[in-house]
Image (cartoon, rainbow, N blue to C red; front, side, top):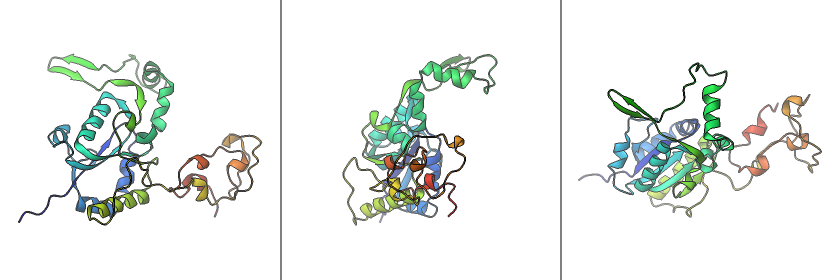
Length: 264
């Protein structure tokens, strides 16, 4: 008797730093649960897999795809559309896929300005002033690289997204919790949350997790951190005139940023 085939899993890295991939591997033994419950069919950073492997799958044959990184070039967009076609559930995994994050700052500049910075500043060894060529006709044939799109887009501006897992990167313990939920669904012990839900984050803000003392905030001005003589390790950063995005950031990370430098 042939055992039932395991549902298929995929993960793709678009325009991002790779921290999301590391965060998944940092789930330690929990990653074995993924292998136990899923057939990992596409994960370029961790296994030898080709785009043709995905193209040869039936539409919807992949149960779950985690896509991290934003959409910066034609290759990112093509593979995002391919994985959407082949996946039942597509998750925008990490801040870059959710809303652009740090790579999205490039949208403040034109494509030409980005290239001028990358290939023409003093820190670049490029005496001939070379720029990317999308096609090069060599004797062996035409070589091509993906076209750099005029703007960077988060995943849901390109394809339909089922769920969102925020974080830069998502915390490993939160990823592990999401893995447990998905496995429980596969085992018939739980149901999927409504489409569009945010997974792997708390219901409040980082302020609720922060160990710093919060009083009634009376902020007179904001100061650059390098201009401060001393930073109180116990007091709310905002109350000291330092920018903190805690009030605008979902909880679930353990307030790692405001906790940096604390003595306790």
